[in-house]
Length: 181
Image (tube, rainbow, N blue to C red; front, side, top):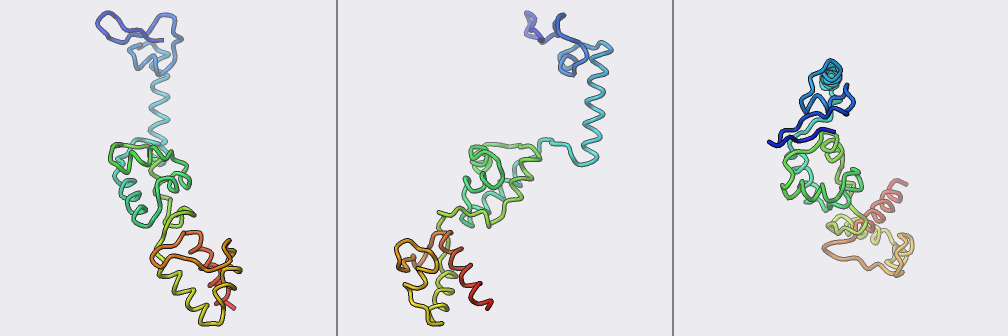
C-alpha cells in the first residue's frame, strides 16, 4: 500500500509487491512495475481501437435522451429498470449534476425506448378512446369491453384526458386482435 510522506506526496511502500500498475502510478519505476503499466496501456489501446473501451463520456447525450423519454411519460424508475442503471444515477444525469458517465452506462440509457413506460404511468387517452369508440360502434357494450379487458371494477371507467399505461396497452392489444380478424 502506498504511503504519504511528510509533504503529502504518495510513495510506494517497500513491502508492496512490485509488478502492479497501481505501484507504478504512485511512483515506482522498477522493471516489473513499468512492465505492468505497459501491459495495461497496450490492452487499453487495443480495446479503444476495437471500440470496447469503457471510457468516460460527456453525459449530455444521455441527459437529452432521459429528458425526451420524460416528455413521453417514461420516468426515471422505468428507465432504471429498463437500462439496469441506478435510479439515483439517472436522476443525477437528468438534473445535470453528473458531467461524465461511463460509455457502457450511456449505451444502456440510449437503448431505452418510449415503450419502457411504467404500468402505472399516465398517458394521453385520445388513442385509447378512439379505439374504444370504434369497438363500441361495432356493438360491444361497455360492460363487455371491461370484462374482456380484465378490468377489476367490471365497468369501463377510464379517464377522458389520461389513462394508466397498462389500460392503454390492454385496449390497444384487444383492439388490434379484433381488427386483425
